[in-house]
Length: 200
Image (cartoon, rainbow, N blue to C red; front, side):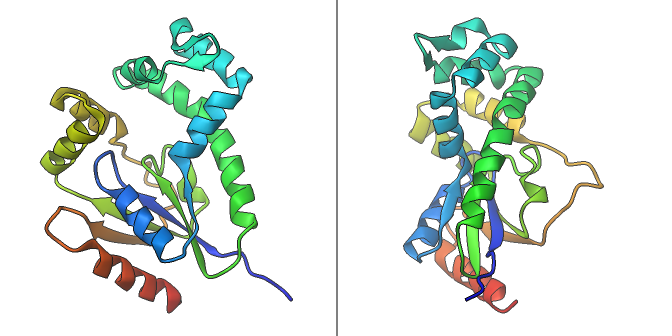
């Protein structure tokens, strides 16, 4: 029997927007979700070549005894756009390769990939639709402060680092906005978006 590769949908949104909440709902509904952050962490933990490249491009101190100091790495790259670009270039190619293999191994109508940096990672060129999760900045800052123990200024720095304006000629898949502001129910928005996808 012939199987079709499912539509790959990106669940996007900056830090604290609540995209992980949307992805948990999708998993509960039975949809596969590829988590770019988890895959990037796994690659960074296991690949010694990447460790060497991080030490060269970011700082020799970010890897100690074969272990990445994530807090130090984050503090460096979120304060330096050039080093953040270097980190992204090192990690994202490997993540895209894993995503392509994962996508090809699934069937069904739709599967999802969670990413905070849609255009910077090049995932806009691999996906057929984007679900963008949004929330007011003050809500996002509060969420991340509670979750990660960061100061408001540290969260603002990360939000600013993720703020990216794609070039006009970059592919832009069809966009659906999901508002996760703590007041509007998320589940009905997700179900409505799934209905639209299933109607294609």
